Length: 542
Ligand code: GLN
Image (cartoon, rainbow, N blue to C red; front, side, top):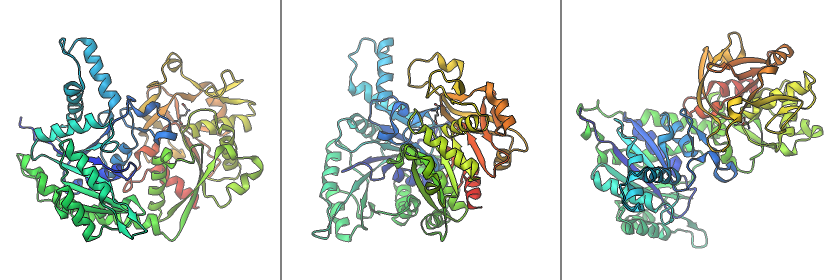
């Protein structure tokens, strides 16, 4: 069997972090995919955590969960949304994962007495974890986390350098840097970019493209300077001025000719036995992205959603939810007007004021006791005032707690996550979870099949009796209370196929009151909004 060779696009970053490497990588993928190529992406994270599962959203932003239950960097969310390709554990390689693998091999005696070292053993492990994605895929995008010059990223950069050397002609390097604008002299400054490229070349990597992120479009002279000192064609210095919506990035790259140049350099068809049909044009798809960006930014009307959370200072902690709401609003031709509500500050007497003019209330996932009582108040408000409610994971658990307390009259009903021996543990651990000791990797994770009951709101929304959605939680609705809750009007509309655990609750007497134990936000995409979010926004508009 002749396997075609995968082509690689390695994306590194310079000068600063947080200049949009993840989105840019995803957008390159969108472009390549629009030419009919199969594309996937991989994130290299230089930190020593084995995965993002134990990292605080305060520090690191959202933990993105894949179908196979991997807890990964939020950039994988961008990849899935932009590429329409399912990610998995293999698509996120951390230093922790690499070292854990090398050390496990050492303990097994696999190295036959050799001294185990960063070069070659760690480097080889990185290379093999990257190459594990080569499975008939045309192009693999590899994003290196961190910035060039960090101690942590060095082994990763060495690994991609070697990979490119071993695959001459099948790999390109994209370096994304910041070109700041100095208002005192009214000039774009290219020096930091020059230094960062020098650093990259010092370790043996010559970039093929410089993507220059800057507050304003790159001037011709700045472009010429970057090209000259980076040893890159002027046409391959791509200007990435700040934009208001991430959906503008794929068309922006297309306008800079990035897809054409990448196809010329990589010639993906070269590796194939059967030639591809003539290259598809990216134009129709790019128009869809542009239209979407326009709606998101400029739609005449907005939909106002209140998000009651505890990480409200760090919006990255709720990245996928924000995205899913934006997609859903756009599907209704609306802008999203998101009102952040700090759960800890919610008081009964100010609820009316807080939620004034709000079309829907959302309680997202979360861990720990902080802010719980405020979230319960928000649910009461939504239930009693017939405001559309969507509860995600913890948001479902809060809905059950609220209903148990205020409708069933079960005083002190709560989750055993917040109180060890409550009178009414309406949310509790399953037996198998109770035995686990380490916090890393002890949750119900990844995609599970849920059966939806006919005649429910959930069934109308999904339009099918079986769905697969992703999980990330330890606690469950306590089966001992399910019937009582249902009798009082909070019914289980969906249950887990394997275990029978409650997956969806809803309140048929309310216009839109639904809680889900899973995370639908991970499956929403800009051009394919998730039905649950779409229905929620629809209800919020009515
Ligand atoms: N803390 C809850 C649990 O572990 C909810 C988790 C979540 O919202 N992701 O079950």
